[in-house]
Image (tube, rainbow, N blue to C red; front, top):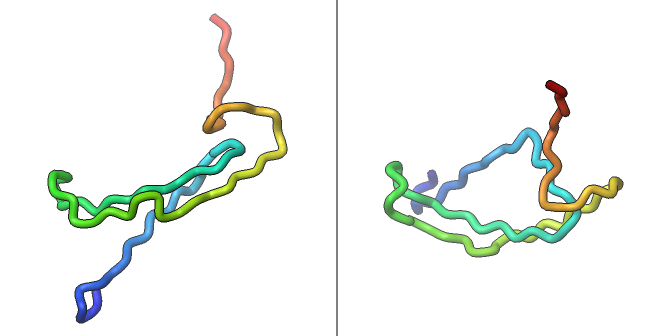
Length: 68
């Protein structure tokens, strides 16, 4: 945090398996108990995701089919 009280935080997602589409990001800064909202950035970022496959939906999750 700088002298004016400004700082930044970074979140890293090692994998974010989003499928094709446009996604808007809204972020909140909460107190340590998650009760008080200090700040809000509503739809401050937009992501356009492309894909090569034909999957449909929002995400593609790693999975395996098992037989019993």
